[in-house]
Amino acid sequence: MQTSIYHAEHEAFRKSVRAFLAKEVVPHFPDWEAAGCVPHEVYQKLGDLGMLGLRVPVEYGGGGEDGFLYSSVWSEECSRAGVSLGGAATHMNLVIPYILRQGTEEQKRRWLPDMAAGRRMGAIAMTEPGTGSDLAGIRTTARLEGGHWVLSGGKTFITGGINADLVVVVARTSEHADRRVGLSLLVVNADSEGFGRGRNLEKIGLKATDTAELFFDDVAVPADHLLGEEGQAFRYLAHNLVQERLGIALGSQVSAEKALRITVSYVKDRTAFGRPVSSFQNTKFELASCHVEVTAGRALLDQAMRAHEIGELTAAEASTVKVYCTETQNRVIDRCLQLHGGYGFMREYEIARMYTDSRISRIYGGTNEVQRVIIAKSLGL
Image (cartoon, rainbow, N blue to C red; front, side, top):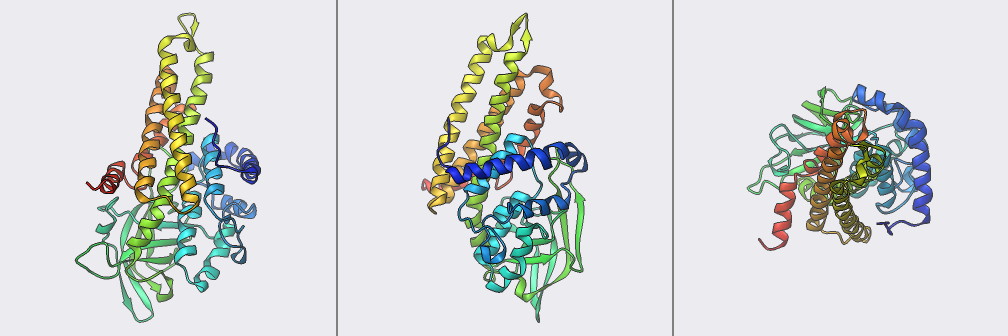
């Protein structure tokens, strides 16, 4: 099924993205996977092309493009090329929007030009060793002393944490009976005294994406690095998680589409018992079933993206599309790997890398179990 949500300007942008990936990313990607990190200088190349600051207003050094569709094109092309750019998506689609929405004029002028140019990369630190999808359970604390906050605690599984120059940290700044109240966002410079990075965590998939432990040992954060109002972070996070979950759904959908496409090609070329694997009824039925699921996922995703563009996508709707597309991705890739036989278990075959990369999609951005809780609440349950 062809999508109808993009216009001519998006397709022109797609050509630029595809050319950049082919020249600057695909040839080097195996080295980045081995290193567990994308070189920081790659982000400046992205900044020079205007790709990181697409949604940043022109007065702050960006492209001034409103909406999510350009970022969606970027995500689609990365999935199609079988590559990732570490924390770039988090930087573009989460950190920059937080600053745009909650930042003061002075904060925007201080941080956004360098972020749009790729000179300073951002990460967001929510997850803790004992707190994942339950954000209200965050234990990292910050107390105001004179002209600065004193930040203490630790975070884990932070995407882009090794390369990050700025980290938006979710910390508890006051205690309330309602645990969702009293959380705040603090922007921390990575060169601050007391800020530390732990391991670049070794994962089963997404190996080129740096994922770090971060530590805050009484870090002095200037008072004017508070993003938005004190105590209102949970509300900000809930709003921006809608877009994060939509972005995860998009990446999952494109991944499922690609798995189907490469498997159809593979079974036509591969033979068994003197016949193409594609000639067996089981192969036809399996791939036909995958096509049905992928087609339905694209229709649901396009509907959600249209709603998001006009500001009408609800949290429950974002959870719905996240659950459907991520679980479709995992089912489709698993069936496609099976049709590759033993070669599907070899990392030199793309379907094997897609299999391990896809597993995180049902976990990050809020586990699919948490998404079902949100959906159930919308049903009055």
